[in-house]
Length: 100
Image (cartoon, rainbow, N blue to C red; front, side, top):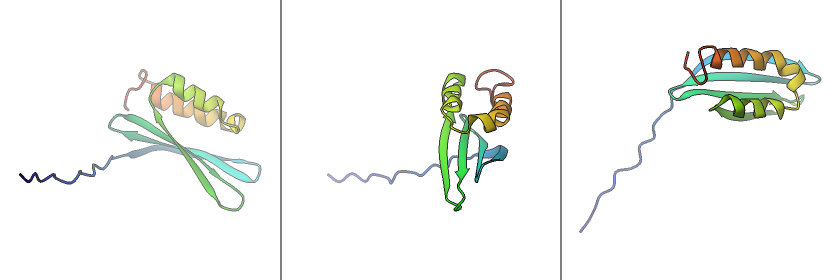
């Protein structure tokens, strides 16, 4: 007996950029992009080094506690403080995890 298996569908996750801001930190530039997705938000923290190498961390914003751990572990926390506050205001202005 032969069974045909349909190929896995590659579902595209639609994301909408709702916030982006960066600051200089010595010879580097560090910033956040915040995307709204069907399940909430995704934050991308990026670092552009002096030699133009870009490093990106992706964080699904699942809870305020997880976000706070991420913020506190950021070595550029002091220069990113205002940016992180703005992200908090966007994500949790209407309650934890509410989509704007």
